[in-house]
Length: 613
Image (tube, rainbow, N blue to C red; front, side):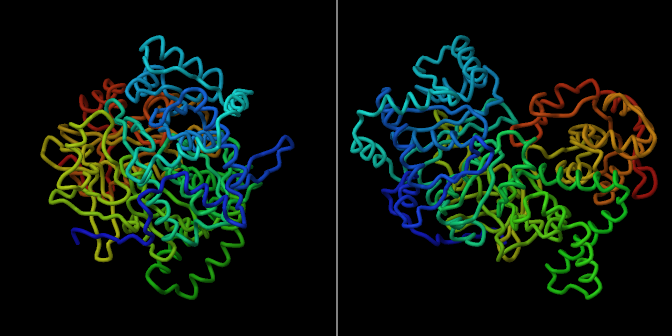
């Protein structure tokens, strides 16, 4: 199949905007709890729609009193927290446009976003963020910036007090200025390649997509459902889900520090979660390592194999009797512990940002957590497609959401159209024109559609490796399989215009100490461990297993272990934990050169014979 579209399930009036979603919830007799915050005693306290609406309007009045005009751009630079969503809605109620900025952004990145967007004000989380913004202003001097408000302390209260004389009718007029076609936010891409581009997302992108996604996912997003937000709200995935939860009446809690995630999950007990694939990989790895540390590694591996086999059999329509029995046994021994670690009530997880991997999807389904993998970009307001509880194929990213369409171009590129697709790139009509072909947005990803309209993503068009021999290699396929090993944190497959394919591998700093201890080995850290032969042999086994799924021409023939992990702080990962491939290759150019100056010292024999032939 080359093209598949799904009609809208819910028609939205053209004069609607995002503020109507909140106003509609506050008008319900149930007045649903839209958020939950920890009080001074550490207990979760619900915030009803009417209370959230009142607080958002009060801040909107303060913005108007401070001179924020309709259509003005206002930045938000903060971690994941309740106030993020509060000021986001306040900006919309004031008729303005919000501009998210990652809290980890450098002064140069902050300066670029503030200057390019023409922001007149910005909300910053704390003193360090305020200082970074002021440094950016001094260095690049964004002319339009007039206000810096701090989320911590009494600043928000003071902003609310500044607007006490602004009439309710003024805010009502302001919020009704925007319709579906009007700009709601400018979200800058995380910049895996080059300078970030500002994606113009409209009120219609969020409203039409949210209400139709809620209609397509009634088992997940409904009044009374609960989720905990720990992904950065500056990222389009978390941002869209946040708006979707308001549209559906879901209660949202926030945790800004992932170190607190497990206790927060256990105390808040969400019914669904959202995460990027790396989070699911870490859950699996930590569960495996905990079992091995307790001398139960063999039991965990058998339980994992059973979970995968049960899920695969369920998808095929028939689970053999003995497999059912093994699955029930391991549910009592293993699976329930994993569910309890996530709060005990989680039934669904929404995954996006990168491919999850079929084995992990089947594993979590077998454990009792159905991972609904979706696909999208910043330019598509997050989801173009997603698996639903009623329409799921593990290993795919689902079929298009209502109102969306997918087409596969002649060269395999995924094209998208529908209510999700952005208006264009801010201030860049040239890039906007390049991004569209006959009304279809060019995603830059490669994939296929099956006979039921489910999308399978196979790689990134720009990341395809073409070896010196002319062989096309999709690095993500090998990287995902190598990264599945508990000792591996990140893997970057390389080989463009090179004689063979190789890889850079970083070690998982959390998994490494236990792995070494169980084998009677010692190392001061990843850099020291990288020289240990048992470590290299274990990594070679992971590479061999991955190579067993591809042809010899595509196999990784050599690898090197980098001395430190690829992280967001090191500049090698985006905030959504995607590899910045160009940055890695730039920083590790000397190490890459050593691979190709000598014959492969670590090479796979998994397929038999010498892979260099």
